[in-house]
Image 1 (cartoon, rainbow over the protein chains, first blue to last red):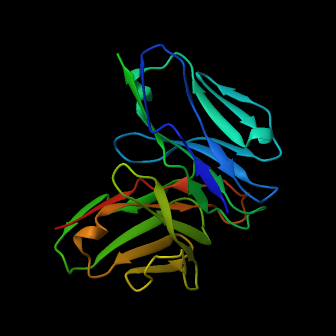
Image 2 (cartoon, rainbow over the protein chains, first blue to last red):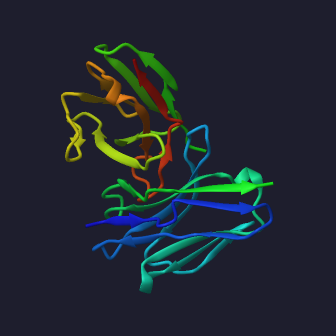
Length: 117
Length: 117
């Protein structure tokens, strides 16, 4: 069965520190998509990244970077030089199916990141 | 970019009443939409898949008579919480994907916070 585990419930860092949010997934599919979303206190989900299972290249976008390791079924997210505005709950998610068959997402339990000034 | 809008963003109702939440894709057509539920400080759980012109597909444990879903057009899905009770208080979020687009290209609504007194 598909499952997404975010073992870190809460993380607190001081501004300018780097922080890594862990995500481990389980799936029997050979093709799947992984996502990271940010949920600020207002509640809306902010899309950060989508990665398909065939693309193991790491990605960097500004202060954000993602490390996808199929061998360990992990898709970790690092924020460099964290800022107070980064404070939010971050969700890792896994989609089932292939080629548009489904866009159902399975979410991890989320990691609450608190960046202190 | 594609936008998904939910209405109302907040609703407070008395126990026993029914509440309708709308999810609209504003600049694309969506054959399928998804409804999620999020309890405070918890993850998002998929409730059902809304299919345009046909019955919704509910996840295990979700009462279809309690949570009525109607997807009458390619841009609108509605979730009606019937005879709401305090335990139905939650944050409801919908997502949609443009028809014919690749898996994982999802857009989430802003969410609707339901409080049942």
